[in-house]
Amino acid sequence: MHGGKVGGTVAEHLDSTGVPGVLIALQEKNVKYDSHTIEVHKGQQLEPWYMRINSAGQVPTLQDGEKIVKESEDIVDYIDREFPNDSKLIPDLSTEVGKEVVKWRKLLHAVPVVMITYGLYCNPELSTSGLKIPKCLFRSKEDILVSFQLFEKKMEQLSDLHPDLREAYLAKICAIHDLKVRIDDKEGVVRVLMELESTLDQVEEQLNKVDADPSKELWFCGQQFTAADITLCVLMGRLDLLGLSERYHSKNKRLRLHQYWLQAKKRPTINRVVVNVRKEMMKQRLKKNAMTALPLIGGLVALGLAAGLAFVFAQKR
Image (cartoon, rainbow, N blue to C red; front, top):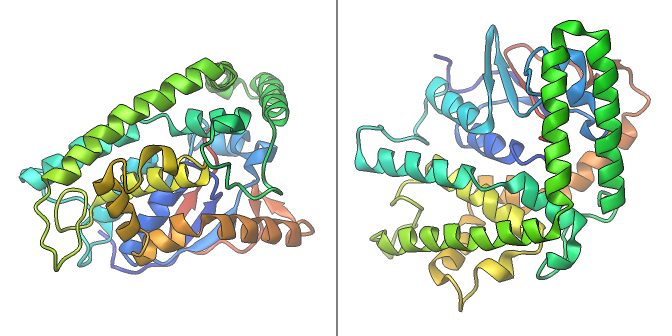
């Protein structure tokens, strides 16, 4: 078990669906870390060095010494367990609150956020109030599909050059092809958006069950901010970014969810990581432009790797 504050490294990409939740957990637990950027749009997450860490080519991945943890929810679990402080994100699983947190994290994590994100990129007319992606970062449907094709071709070549990773690359090619087909199906994207209505109906019902003391903050599973709140807030922030908030909550539709989100956005960690994501994406792009002259080391921009925790983030494809 680590102490409350340690040196660390985060190689991040804020457009990733997995990164925000982990960053919120790090900040809630007061874990110190440095930041690095991986050029995911150039396919660095598919490089052999990363595929050997995470054979699925997915993100995020956490490496703490010899320990490697994959998947954002598992990383949040690890952070909460290994960096104890006054903020306990996952209550005792033997308690009713602990069981509720597990239940809701599982339900919300099952929402196909990656498909929804790329589905809206490819079909922006499905956005209620318009995509909030900075123009300099927005990519058209044609650009996205071409990128996927290039990634598939690159992985075919890499699978021949690295026989030990051949099965991993072939599996990743299938996954990218499947995603490409799904986001190119507008009717399929519409169905997923409709299914999300049902999920958020359940969220609204849960929020109505919580007996909130008017003098205290209301959170998803009671008075305590938990990992379930992190998962829900990351989803709500993504809906904001995709211009879908008005469709799913307002003063006239899912009022409790609407009130919850207004409150959640005031929490410092949620405000920094989720609410201000557009500003941070712009800063990240400017930083990338400024660092183009620096050498690359193992696919990471050379900013100097600190000792201790090592986090590698990229966009799940």
